[in-house]
Image (cartoon, rainbow, N blue to C red; front, side, top):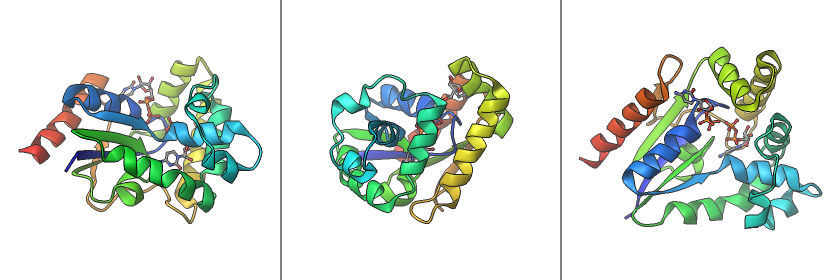
Length: 194
Ligand code: CDP
Ligand code: CDP
């Protein structure tokens, strides 16, 4: 059985940073599932068809990290048929030897409910906005509003809403450096593997 690590949490909480670091540390595959929704939103046209026909080129499109692409992603992500179209690919990805790390919103709850380790990464709204604003070179006040709107839409949708799985370990990174956050995540995985 491949070892699956599920990482969920709100926007800009540090999921991707932790997921990449865990994958590098343990030699696992990594999938940023948010990129699937960002690429689907950016493709335009019928979102269900866009999700069904998503290709590697779509994931390399420039501008996918922008706040605008994030908003488009969260709108298409609320459509059940879009989520259904992306589900099989994510489940197959997770089943690769020797293991995989997937980060998103519904990995521990819907995509990989049997994951060996589930982390729910979070941080205060202000901290998340400051980090994302620094990353994008954007205004923290505007980014704060954008993150809150997206978190609200992601949490309130009927299908696969953002919420910690019952068996997830919550990791609040508000007062942690990146190195500290990664060390705690590695410790959780080591404990599960022991
Ligand atoms: O994947 P997600 O949107 O949850 O967040 P991320 O892209 O991993 O992190 C957002 C930004 O916060 C990046 O610029 C990270 O370098 C930074 N970060 C941080 O400053 N401290 C942490 N403990 C984690 C991430
Ligand atoms: O990096 P950040 O946390 O800002 O966003 P992301 O992980 O790239 O996700 C962009 C959007 O895709 C989210 O706001 C969600 O609406 C959606 N998403 C989702 O619904 N389910 C996932 N597993 C991953 C992302």
